Length: 299
Length: 275
Image (cartoon, rainbow over all chains, first blue to last red; front, side):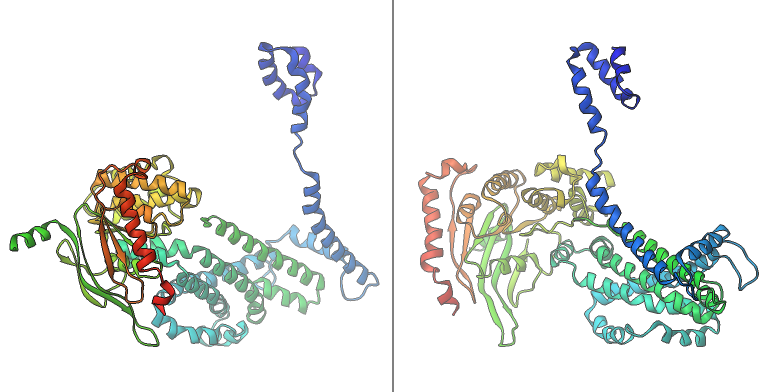
């Protein structure tokens, strides 16, 4: 049987050994079947791969191409190549510190994420239980709904002075702004989710005469989870939108402040890099929560 | 005479006396049920039959305690029935299993509620497994409701209701959404389960064959609005009842004919009666 093994290329050797062990007992008719094995090793659908990989690449290529064409004659707007060079330099040392107003982009992103985490976390802590209560008790719903409708469309920046007034400091004011802007989607989605819990499930709860706590944890929470996670996703998106604007006004270390600082330095390449970075971080946050949400799908 | 009254009290599980139910509407109260009088003995299988909209389910919901009657008296084992409770196991029409719990988890939720305070975890587990075995679902106890067929879901619903060891089993068209073959199979299984557990059952159905096959008594409701009990038919067929043999049994045919006659001759004009 050793002749069979040497006959085939090395990458199929492992399979051939197993196969030859079987073939040793059976007839040599196994040999013609082996080329079929080789075909099975390439199950990649090239067409599908091309369709998923190339159009996005082409889209990005087109964007950069137009950008390159528009900046080909120079001017204040940097070319893609110049921006790339600046990005390479910037990310070579993302965590340096030269005083409070000159820190690496890595620190700026982390500080922004910390504010978003704090503001959003507090919003979740308040918003989700509030949403549950509003969804469960009609009187509370009637009481709070008009206020929510009134406050929801208010621009984030309108909240900033209130934060500055109350906290007398820039950082808590920025966190406050994120808190107040990212709380609404969670409150509303949780409340809608609670209201949409199928009557059947609640009848089960009534027949079993479950306690209000049991109803909340065993029936409402799992049932509301998909709605809740949609709210969380919207909230994180809002929080990340708001942080840039808030930091531009409050200063300190953070990606929003960094954009403004680079504008004052007239470093447009850095601003473009910041835009990409903000986009990528936002995308990553979104992806994280979509992945989390998938784990709670039960149908 | 007093001895017979005492006897009745001792053997009856459910006592419904002059119960009426009306719902408020903008155009004044809508009377759904009136003058309902019914006693159900321990271990008895009673079905409610009538045209759709006649208030069968309303009556069942009253017994379940999900709604409160506007008039009349209801006693469950001689105690006034107030609100829903685990002493009545309800099997809902659309199974109402919680989709995020496994079959076992759904049964366990009920068992834990009823026996959680006085039994050990191992005992609770034993009860859940026994209930699932009773309906023949031991093999798929860890599956989610989304992964099993409609008939199996309904069986889990029955297991959940029976696992609570209720005084009564209330079933609201439990097999209505199933295909004919699955329905027949579940009817046979239900008969076997009831025979083994001696459960007292009140079941809503619109299937005449189902009613005659399963019941000790068939309660026929008149057309709504203001429906009431039109007639009660005693089905004196010996048990176990075999589907195929029954088809030619003269008493079965007679019972079936009486129900059909009630539904389609005497209560046939649904639209006219409702207008």
